[in-house]
Length: 313
Image (cartoon, rainbow, N blue to C red; front, top):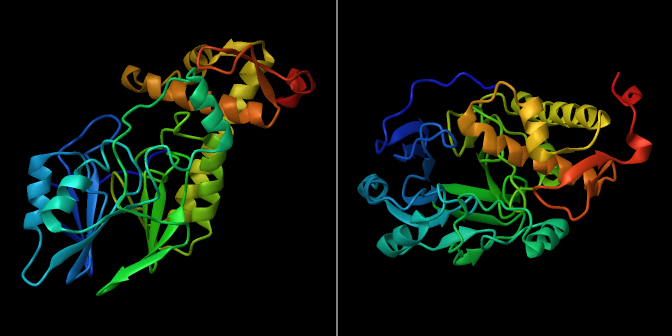
């Protein structure tokens, strides 16, 4: 279920979301970004930029021109190293003199199993990764950063991406691509990790937030309800995959064709990556296993103790 989206804001125009908080939409609409990337400007004098977005000169000019008299950009925060979120950080840093802050480079934060699988090179993935991203300041989980008029608490929330951070500001959270209202997040191994995704959703749910400001789409004004739906949605997909595997071994591609029957063709590759993420999670939990090396093209089957339709009827 997707939350109904209001009309798209105009790219390049600062929209006020609340006291000391503005949003500028980047001009990069796509099936994976909705209207485009949300860049947030937090503060009234010292400005924090959250997710500067793609390396686009038009968007850079829009961010710089949004500075009002007496304002200056002092910090540039990046939720994660995808090409629609982080590349403009370096150019914006050069123009403003502000440091870039993030969890780590594009490989930081991967779980041990994803590191192992990535070294094998058999998973594919790597969609839209900003491989050149390196923050000036690496932020630890729980770090608190502030300036005149604002303070952010950093939460390491891997799942959509290993180096994904969410930022807590009083009763608001900048949730990047972990939780969005218009769609569920892509989880594409080895950068995405479904086990981590589920844990991060639970962690974010425990934050007493009244609104989530996501990387794409409108603010989410019922955070717990949205997170509950995302968790339920993933558990439902897992149940569908397990039920399909009870009929016999299958590949991620085969399961995708069987399960995602109403998904547009443009989103089918992303759906297949999500299925692969589920299969890796099931293997880690010893519910399923791959025939041969664990790779994107592998055939998967339920472990014998999990087989049989009685588990799903």
